[in-house]
Image 1 (cartoon, rainbow, N blue to C red):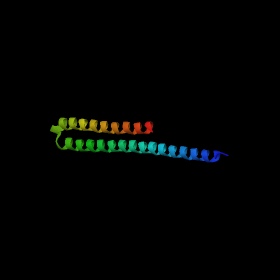
Image 2 (spheres, rainbow, N blue to C red):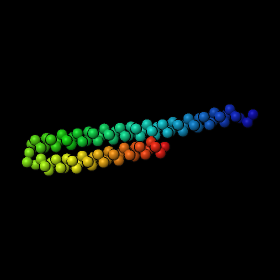
Image 3 (cartoon, rainbow, N blue to C red):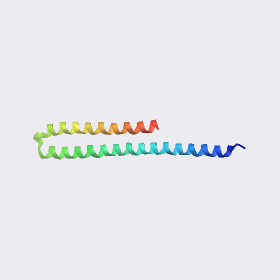
Image 4 (cartoon, rainbow, N blue to C red):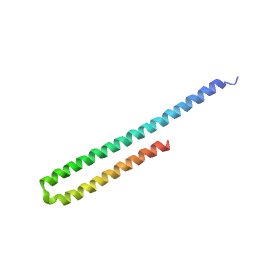
Length: 94
């Protein structure tokens, strides 16, 4: 007997620990991607609401407000997309 059962149990425990670590990384990446999408949605919603309120208060400045709103919304989308790409990289590289 060279401890075959012990070695098998040891390998199974090591494999289980590795799978748990990988699953935590994938779960964290999924939660991070969800939070990034939720944050971007809330941010763009607030910007849109504030821009509509500003255009209603000052119709003569609606062109400038709309341009600034679109630029800021695009920057928020870029930040959210960057966060999603990082989360995908974390999930695929683990």
